[in-house]
Every structure is written in C-alpha cells, then in structure tokens.
Image 1 (cartoon, one colour):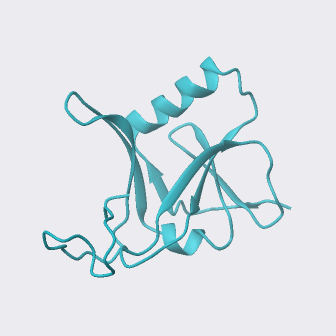
Image 2: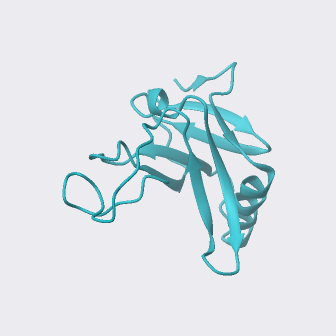
Length: 124
C-alpha cells in the first residue's frame, strides 16, 4: 500500500514541474511519477538521484507537488525533508535539475577538493 503524505516534505519549483511534465508528455509516459532518492554518499554527504518511474512499492511515499506526482522511498524520505527541486536553464552552465537541501551539511573545499582526496560538488 502506498503512503500518501498529508504534509509535503519535498518541494518542486514551477519551472522544474513544467520540465518534468514536458518530459512525460514528450515520451508519452502516462502514469509515471518523478522518483527522488538517495544515491550513495561520501564526505560531501548524500547525493540525490531522480528517475521517471511507474513501479511503486508498498514502502514508497507518494504526493503531488505543483501538478507532478512524486515518489520517495522510505529510506530517502528522511534525507529529503525540507528539500526543493529546481530546474535551471543557464546559457553558460547548461540546463538541468538541482536539489537544494537545507539539511545537507555545508562546508567549503579548498583548492584541492574534498578532504577525502576526491573531487565532488556539494551542490546536488
């Protein structure tokens, strides 16, 4: 049984919602939702992934945000509380989705990248 959230924990901007709706329409994906999930982690914290999905599980939480059906699994939901998804269309950097998470530990990297020795971006 899917859990429906009464209080939205993850927000999607109007621009991101429109981008998702455009993709669903272009690909003729009726009945699909935007799944947002935790994808690994590291010294920068967790990374988030997104996919269009129509395979909902009993442990999933579903809700509508700006006209888009959203799906989050029971592990990822705690990491996503208070987060927002936006769509950026920048002529220099390109276009794409970005997850802004106020719960993500913010820290700065020196010129050498992460303290773990790798390079990563803490802006998911």
